[in-house]
Length: 413
Ligand code: ADP
Ligand code: ASP
Ligand code: MG
Image (cartoon, rainbow, N blue to C red; front, side, top):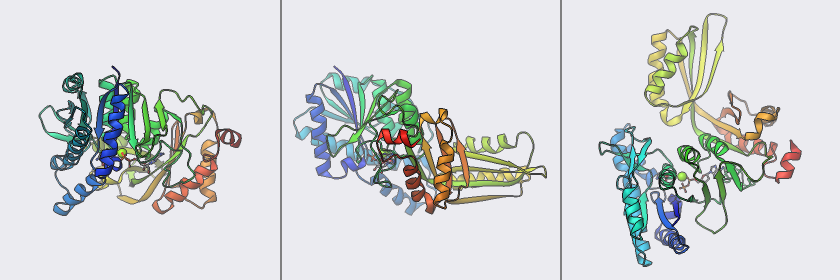
């Protein structure tokens, strides 16, 4: 019997009515002949509320205790969903991440899944039950509870789908699929029927919060097809899979933006081998991800090094960089969290010159200053002032004709 993994995000289970609607949907999948594994997030804004609660107690709570706190959100939703399915007369069991075999490393608040032990889930499925697993949480080999980073339920779902060799992983959310830009920012954004793993990974990493990047990485590694769709209707959503089948000729598939970024600069660092290695290995040692990096060379044997980090990491990054700057004899450190990153993504870019220029022109026309640029074969990112971010997304989206038809996009290029 084929296995189907269905994941429901917070807004899909925000209140008892929604939970009952989700229960109905799960039962329908079971009635279509699937063995169903359900992954569920915390109700509505529970995770945000728990974070706020912790802040009222401590400015920097121990990460292990944060995980202990945040994991409670998903424990509420699995129990309630199990009750709702039981009410519909179906055999069901809820499991925590640990019971569901989600084994992670000990990097609290952003743990990585090391292994998924599927015995318990498989045993319950074999007994004919619908199995509900708490999203976002796991356990270390030493039995400490961990969480997988914001949006981590997506990763729980895809990891389970991979380990169980599920036919597909459905990600139910509050939008109809993956759009050419966040539909809340660009109302004319278009739903993509298909997107490749590579493009989706870039979109997600660059701020398209509809999927956690790690989930896309797992999907790509284990070839799990993901269907992103709405839990509020029965429309087909977006298929994330190996190759885009439709719209093959789209050069840019989407515009992503991320306001959770900050800029760090180290000024007048002595220009000698090993300097970059020293700075970035100190950050890596604390699991801080660095994204855009620019280094300028000056006449006087010194250099300025600029890079971006997640805004959540800024206080820690600042501390680390200040210490390293002192050790290296740099003139100073500047930080700025009034920035945002706007990016275009598309596999077609590599063979089409002028794509980056078109983005820069659109920003220039809108009088938006670009502070840092980074590019790869499949994306171009610009750091802009935070207050310019949404306007930047809209003008770039328009410049690539993304709200028009596929044909129009091709003609526009
Ligand atoms: P869930 O709680 O279901 O996991 P999320 O809030 O994590 O939902 O993700 C869905 C949200 O992602 C949407 O409401 C939308 O605002 C946002 N989003 C950002 N970029 C995109 C995009 N390109 N396509 C669709 N949604 C996007
Ligand atoms: N509840 C967690 C969060 O809000 C995990 C998730 O929703 O995927 O980030
Ligand atoms: Mg999410």
